[in-house]
Image (cartoon, one colour):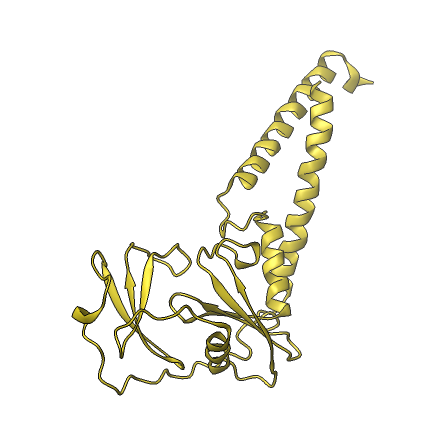
Length: 232
C-alpha cells in the first residue's frame, strides 16, 4: 500500500516541482520591463470641483455612514458614503454614491463613463474596442469583490483598463504580457481559485502530499532493508 501511495503521490509532487522550477526560472530571467502593465498609463492629475458642493446635511440616506469621501472624475464630482469598514479597494463595499453638486443619489457607473475614465488614464495609440462589466468575484478579477468595468484598447500590447464601479477610479492597467506574468504567478503559487495570496488550502494540501511522499518513501525503504533487497 505504501508503494502505491508513494508512486502516485510522488508523481503529483514531482509535476508541481517541475512547475515551481520552470516558473522560478521565468521570474529570474525575464526583465520586469517586458511585463510592465503601466506602459501606457497616464497619471494625469484629476480636475478639481470648481462649483459649489452640496452640504452633507442635504444628502439622503446618509444615516449610519462611517465615512464620506469626495471623488472627482471626468464625468463630475461625487460623494461616496461608506457603510462598512474596508482597508483595501478589493474588499466588498457597502456604499451609496451621490452627485456632489445636487446631492441626489448618482446613477450607477455606465459604459460611456467607464470609457471616459479609462481614456483619461491611457496614453497609448489604441482606440477603445469595448467595455465589459464584470461582477465581483469573477475569475478574471482575482480577489476583487466589487463590480468593475474592463475597457479594452486595440494597441499592440492589447491593453485593458479596469475601472472600479463604486469608487469610479482606475484600479489597474493590464496587457497581454502582464496577463501572462499573472498566469505564471498563478502556476507558481497554485492560486487556481484566485484567492490573491499563497496561504490557501491547495498549497497547504501540496505540502501535506510532499510530507506523505517522504513518510511512505521511508516506510518503503525500511521494508526493503528488512527484506534484504538493498543488499542484492
